Length: 424
Image (cartoon, rainbow, N blue to C red; front, side, top):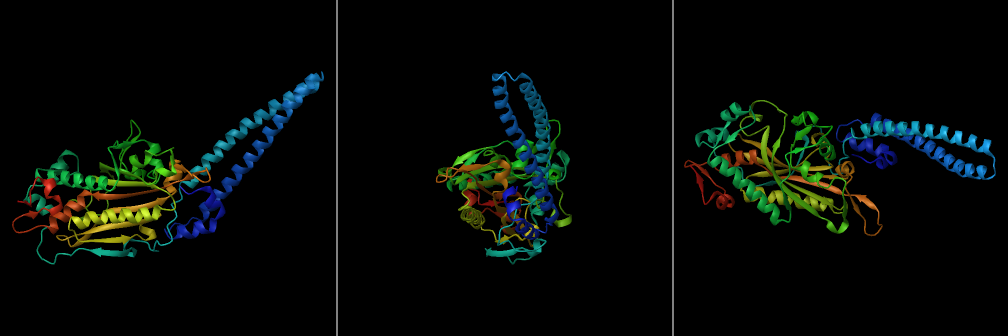
């Protein structure tokens, strides 16, 4: 969440920058400042009454020493009254802090200066294209290929659970496993420490990375235990550092994890949700970085380069897109999306988002580092990216690598597929 300092010191700037995300923050900012003024006034009253109690305590001792019993007892009664007032003020302070917190968490993160203005994905900016788009006509879509080669059973998934929960079969399951291992191997080779986190988290974890309260309706909730199935490994992995003060010398902190991911949103209709295009459960390898504020945008560039190396080595046509304000997430300061071309569907499919959250998540997480020069604790920067999400990568591989003889296995995956070069 945004810090009170930046809201109070730069209210016009906050309103102006959030307008880039198509968020009208004027009324909210004014309310937050008014609530903070109330908190400050209560704190001043508390300090004054506590100071008065301290003075009276010294005075009472002196009065008793001088045998001025009546005056001492009167001072004691005044102390009791002050303590009752402080008790009420403490509750007022707790209420004020709670009201203030509820308002602050509703403000999105400020977009970085280079975020383009816009309302929808159509306003995003393509910053790079790579690979060659197949020009061959009559190519099958991945759901047709999945049925032809018995790789994915969508109907069985529908029987077992429901729409959006496919069953991978035989070589289809092997391809999933191969991609997961390939992505993890590349992440660990790049210096990311692998974790295997829980796939359910508590409310504190959901709040820490910004899924709660913003995306509560998009997550599967286990009501009896008040736990949430994770939408991405970003949530448990980043929360490893909740309420932690790291050493400045620890930067960069690089983590990776494979997890299944769960998302309730149904999305749109038709071709947008057909086959693997939009699922409720899917596999993904995530990379997470905790870094120094002065180096986080360099870290973002490195993460983008890492994801680009994956799609390039898979031989897939791709493009890198800088998201406009209206298409960015609630928590992000700057996001780059990776899209791969689906040769059968003749459309672009998003396979990764790589984002810098600056201090937004860190402030929720209370994730700080100790500055070695000033010795003060400072909020760190957090970043994450999909490296990569599997469903649309699988769809793109199947559609782009289809031949008359079968589906060719990308060269980089052949060792992970036990030497298999073509899926027949």
